[in-house]
Length: 376
Image (tube, rainbow, N blue to C red):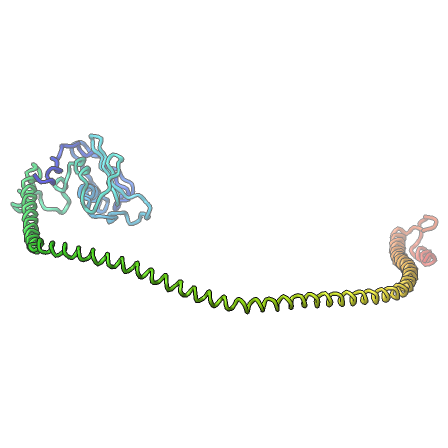
């Protein structure tokens, strides 16, 4: 039997649908519909979300359409988008835009294929769902489609799968047979090329023996070539040695001349050093003379500096006295201003109180004015 048929299992009888949960599915933001064990009637106005519930069930059962086609238009990109079906046997199947969720376990989906685990848990297909504008179930369908649907319900569609798989296997086998025939023909053509192989083998053996002789001759030739190269190298070395022997005599004479020149240069250096030493001593003597002369002049300059320092001290003392005098003058000016202010305040006070400044008796402003003029 085909491997595909071995993977196919009969559908099992499952529990009844207990509730439906919708998050941001079309007009539903967060809805949960609990179904009656027998019959549940959904009543409401148009666009209230009745058909959305059927679409949500069909979306999980068929995995169509893909993506977020049913997502609420007012929902934000990060808002959750999913639908859950809960059965009275405890199973819970959900679907979001990427994966199926069965009892909390995530199952990745690929394309529009419904994973087998989901089919086995749901035990539902599009035959179990009748939309609002669908044709009457099996009444308006063709005889072939009715037979196909009935076969799916009682699992007789396995015959179609068997025939389809068998035909597929036959086509595959025929294709492999043709390929193997071509390979056999190519192999026969390749074998025909090797019919003259024994004759070729003898030729190869003869050539190998000749190659061995050639290799031996080539090795001998390489040895002779190395010897010849060595002789030529030594010959050049001998010529170089003879030339160096001829040059050596001339070099010895030149070296003797260099020795004489070096001794003369040493004597010249000694003389130049002595001359420089004498000149240095002369410069030191002249410097000492200048130093003695400068010392006498320096004593006179130091006496003048002492006199200058004394004069500077006297000037500083006079400057200090002038500064103190200026400070005292500033203080006197400030006192005069303060005395004038206080006199004015006293006159104002006496005039306001009409009291004599000498005896303290009441008097007139004219008398007070006279006394004030005498005071001023």
